Length: 364
Image (cartoon, rainbow, N blue to C red):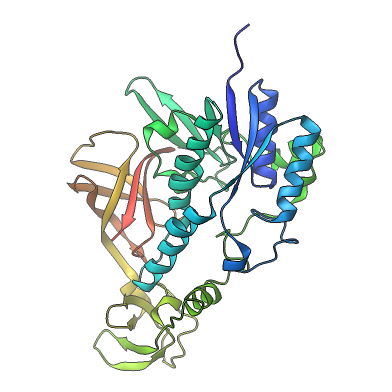
């Protein structure tokens, strides 16, 4: 009899990862559970005991109960120091530089794969698995592991996985990619999982109330730093008002500007270096070109110089047809067939060919 393949499954305490763990167990894998402690409540706010989501006492208690019932070993890994250095500090510094970051992309590549794979090696695991709604498939014709969209288009998380390399993908199982969210809840109920009716995870797990402004303000004040007010200008350079700090604004924002104007005004540009916000009408938000940096290619080791693909410029953006012109090892210029609204520096741009992720990068 062949030995069962061993899988270290990332479990948060939510319905998705809990069900993924049991789906793999039913598929005859030798599963062990790994919970990543990513942040400290003292630093980010929230309720250590009663917040039933990732990293809380409540979530860990639910995991202990689940693993005890099924006799599955549970390990808790403290990645909080690395998470603070790599994810939170980058999140804050990007906002201070006038950019809008995608912390989940960095967290996935650096923590949930790179660091988690190191723990898998220590535990002699063949694979790691997560509860992401995406798929990983090997294409023998090109000898590459590919990321594909999940079957449930409303839950697809392939956008957040473009930073993964071939070594990581070759050892990754994503059991939820072929399911719809409604099916996962049904499976969880059938298995009598306590997590079956748990609410969805927040957009950024480390911001307890989803209030970016509060988080950024408190993070800086605890370190003796404060955001300075500055000028809000139109494209002609005329001063229209005062802002509370450039970190509290993002491209395309209309609410909270505190400006009275006959027509609606939107944030068109953030000049963090000079502490200025530049506003204009909605038409000025539409652009057909952008530059990308830090590109990671998944479908190729060496991509062609020119590529036609559908490009997403934010998670909820409908991918738009564009031409990708390679300008360097990890850089490219993108030209859309039609202008796109609110292209935002710091956000991820991900390239698709139908349901296959070709690669991705950061909007410069």
